[in-house]
Image 1 (spheres, rainbow, N blue to C red):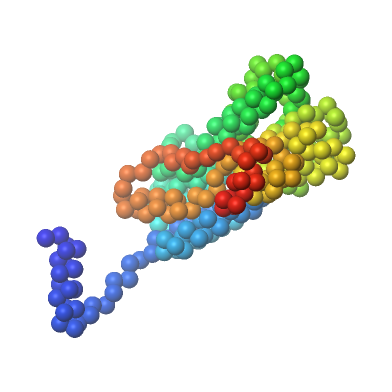
Image 2: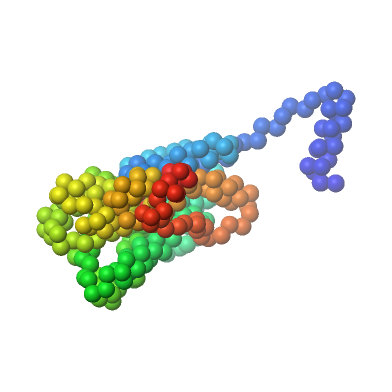
Length: 320
Ligand code: AHR
């Protein structure tokens, strides 16, 4: 008979005799989570998902907002180590510069789970797994949509401007690479300008204004690494007296509600989904890791592409 079975039989016998045992208060799992910040609609949905999932899973969550700064994340991770949490999870602002602090976590025997964004470390044993999207594929999907769009206007050259995410971050690096891979060598598609707008609406507007000042009506396409920058750019395009979605075709990434609203208004042409609802998978993975169960090194979430034509139909189903 197993220990659990013996305990159950003994407890059942005592219950029949009218004696109750004090309930075993299982110690809740403690996760220290360092979030990038609150730069976008996507990020807000990601934070809500993690906090809600922790509550539902009975996990004690120590949450720290890094306000887009790597040094804040390093400080938060060191503080989680000092507090001896069971698991450290974080979404890294940028890819490089993590070796030292992750070695400290390993020396303290605290497993590290990456969510959303990857790190660039030589020793992959410094983290258990990465849960999140395939950003290169998202960039390819954006590129493929544009290649198909260009095919419908044979002979026409399309000048592209690109709003990149945070410099050095995995989604900015990978979405750029995936997009370039697909449009490379296409005689119709020409990259005019590319610049970071840090994944925010305010910067998206500001950088798009500069693009418009320099190139005006020569811009045919905007590729934005996230919806927030696209939404900021839409404002700049309208203020310049042009029609977003028509005079300038807009391709962006995330699939947040704001993007669906813009598509329904005819101001955005397509959004490539990036799923922020990573909370439940993070909680389950953390429990598995602590229980010593094997975990895959990479857990990729399912995603789709939403062109403007399906926006009204899909909008009621959107969860973020
Ligand atoms: O890392 C995911 C990216 O970060 C999202 O695309 C963007 O909106 C966020 O800020």
